[in-house]
Every structure is written in C-alpha cells, then in structure tokens.
Amino acid sequence: MALYSDKVMDHFLNPRNVGIIEDADGVGEVGNAKCGDIMKMYLKIEDDIIKDVKFETFGCASAIASSSMATEMIKGQPLEQADQLTNKAVAEALDGLPGYKMHCSVLAQEAIHEAIKNYEEKGENKNE
Amino acid sequence: MKIYADNAATTKISDTALNTMLDCIKNFYGNPSSLYTIGQKAKEKLEEARLSIAEIINAHPSEIIFTSGGSEADNQALLSAAEIGKAKGKTHIISTAIEHHAILHTLKRLEKNGFTVTLLPVKENGIVDADELRAAIREDTCLVTVMAVNNEIGTIQPIKEIGEICREKGVLFHTDAVQAVGHMPIDVKAMNIDMLSASAHKFNGPKGAGFMYARKGIRLTNLIEGGAQEKGKRAGTENVAGIAAMAAALKESVENMQAVNERLTPIRDYIIKGLKEIPHCALNGDERERMCNSISFCFEGIEGESLLILLDQKGISASSGSACTSGALDPSHVLLAIGRVHDVAHGSLRISLGADATMEEADYIIKSVKEVVEYLRGFSPVWRDLTSGKKEFIL
Ligand SMILES: Cc1ncc(COP(=O)(O)O)c(C=O)c1O
Image (cartoon, rainbow over all chains, first blue to last red):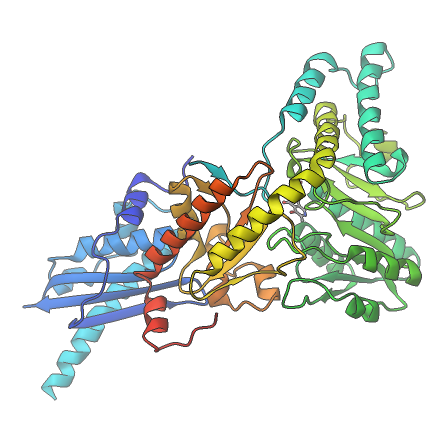
C-alpha cells in the first residue's frame, strides 16, 4: 500500500505555482520550523480576484502537495470564495491524506487566510 | 539504480538463512517439546542454534534465551533486572538519552512502578561519557543499560569500559546490542556484559526471531507465561525455523565481518565526504566511532520526509528522524540529544549501507542527495530566510 494517493504524489513531485511573487498584494506565512512545517503564500489580486498565487513550503510531501493543490483551487477565484476554502476540500481534492497528515491541509487553508488578511489590512491602511 | 540503504531498519534475509528456514519449515516441523523423533529433531535444530550463537558471543548455551526479537529481549532484560533490584531494595536504573524506544518505554513503565531512572546525556558526538556514568552510579543502582551501537546515528558506545565499571561497582549491566551483534565482535565475558539483546533481522536473518543473553545466575522474570519452553522463562512453541535461520545468519555475518568492515569503511567515508560538500549540513555522530555502514546527516532548510520520498523516486531507500516520518510531533530524541535543535533535526537523513554496497552506488547516493536537497531548498521559505539573512544559519 502506498503511503500517499497518486494525486498527492503528483502534486508533490510536480508542484504547481511554486515560487514567490515579488510585488505580491498579500503574503501569508503559517507554521513554524520547530514543528517541521512552514507554508508561505503569495497573492496577486485585481478587482478582488486572485490573479496569481505562488507558494513556498518547508515540510513533508503532504504539506507540499496541499500547498500546490490549494493554490490551484483558489487561482482565478474571487477573494471571498478563496477565503472560504476548507482544509477538507483540499484533502478531498488530493483524494485524501493519512489521518496524521490532515494538519498539512489545515496549514494550506490557514496560509491562504493569512495572505488574504494581509491584503485586506494593507488596503485598510491605504485608506487611512 | 535501486539501492536499499536502510539496513539499520532491517536487512534482507541472506540466502543461507532463507534456505535454513525453508529446510526447517519443511523438514523439521515437529514441536521441540514432543518426545518422539520428529519433535526431537526439531529440538536438535534449536539446540544447535543455541550452541552456535553462544559460541559466537562467548557465552554458555544455557545463557541464551530465544525471543521474538530485540524489543522482547529488551523488555525482559530490564524487567528482570528491576525485579532483582527491587528484592534488594535497589530501585535506581541508569541508561542514556539515545536508547531505542524498546528501552526508553520500558524504563517509563518502571518509573511508574516506583523506580528512579537517570538518563545520561551523550556528548555532541553521540557517545556516552563512561566517567559520567561511573559518577551516576549510586548505592541503590540495580541496573545500567547502555546500547552498544545507536540505531539512528550509528555511534559505537564504550560498552567494554562501561562493563568494567559496572562489574567493579557490582551493578548489573545490560546492553541493547541489536545494532551491534553480527556487525562487530561481541564477547560477553571480555566486555563484562551481564545481559544482552539481539535481533535476527538486523543481521540478514528473519524478522520475528531474536535472543537474550543472561549471565548464569541472573533470575529472569517472564513476560509470557505458559509452557516450560526456554527453561520456563519464555513460554510458547519455539519459532524453530526463525531461530535456526538466525543462527545461520549470525554465523555468516560473523565470518564476513572483517571483510565487510574493511570494504564498507572507505565507502562510508567517501559518502560522508561527498555529502559534506552540501552547504549548511552536519554529520550526526562521531566521525570515527561509528558503524562501518552508517551515515547520518542534518541538512538545514529542508524537511526529511520529503527528502526521503524524492530519494525513493530515485530508487534509494533511506530513513529520517523527522517527526513527519513517524507521525510524531517531535523529531528524533537521538538528534535532540546530540544537540540538534528541532528546526535542523527535521532535516535529517540516515543512510545505512548493506554489506554489498559499491562505490558506484556511493556516487549515485551522493549525486541524488545533492540534487534533492538543492531542489527542496529551492522552494523552502526557511532556506529563503536563511540565505537572505533574515534568519541565522545554525549549521
Ligand atoms: C537498537 C535497537 N533496539 C531494539 C530494536 C528492536 O528490535 P526488534 O525490531 O527486533 O524488536 C531495534 C530495531 O528496531 C534497534 O535498532
């Protein structure tokens, strides 16, 4: 029995949207190196639509695959919808994760949330 | 290329061991406790194995108890020594921070039952300080248990020195020699070992067979009650085929020991030298006092599980002390004990070579690890912070 689904392996071996966005509109980083997982999401936003998204991840295969899948799921989506992405949806899209790896999908959800929050906070500051 | 480089986890059964096993299963199927010929023939196999193993470690056959493996031997040795100690009012046990969980978890259990445990730290090189051990022995110390070779970083512990100290102080000495037996010379008399654990699958024998050596006169406590097998100290119909195969594997391993050592040492050192070229990495454990097949590194800025899976894609089977590989929250206690902080310990890699490893394989391992580490660092936010100066390098 393989540890991971084919989908997880595909996204781990061929991660989509890897890298950084230099002039990102929102950046979110979650996790910590002590626990062995850090996820960082970069968003480019136009008219409340996620035009581009990139990620960097330090972590296990399922953390990398979760980041990759999550970026695919929110790319081109309206912000509001992207912010509602759940970890369960990410895990399901990957055809499941082993139980003790579910936190990897939680990190992906949280990283996106943090990046959107960061974008919104920046906007609020601009209006001050 | 396909390279099985996780021989500290388990080894492939040797042809000799496999043939012995098949022969026993087919032709010596009797119950050794039965008194007719078929039973007694199986009993003979068992006793041949006991004699052969005893001779190899310089013990008497009556001092060898067959078990299901290393974990069982560790459990029984510790619980037996604890019982002996308790009867004399001695309830202090000394061990080290780098033992296998078969030891550490048994010690935890003993602590719950009123024993006091001192876990000695190890030096940065992954070796316990014999002087510190001597100083830790108290009036009420009933047992010292120190592994012969560490399973994660391959460091060889000064068990002869420790044996001498224990004998001098009149304290029982047990060694978990699961990683040592079949790989380095063990002489229980010369090393003053009172009890020892070993496991067949670590020296090209089958899984599910192991043995404990307990010096004559040491009263053992049963883990398994039942029939009178193993002089009443380990009930259950014996795993004749597994035990005979274990003896065959051990004999073969010991015969080849010196040649394998001489052949593997330069290959090991070549891989260590090659991997050291990777920036911001560190070898775990002493450079010299280590098993001839054992290599352990930490690479900063990456996580071990993803490293393993990418190596697996390249045909290399290795392991890591990263928390993610075990489902635990913390990385390996051994890496933490030698002073690697969490961030770095997660990026560990253990390569344990098989006896048949070649220089060509060494080159492939070095090349593959370099590629994979560089690839993972390429999109690691930790690595970015380190290289941009936002965080300071640890290694
Ligand atoms: C040092 C050490 N002790 C004990 C064990 C347990 O041995 P077994 O798997 O035979 O129970 C192992 C192997 O996993 C080991 O490496």
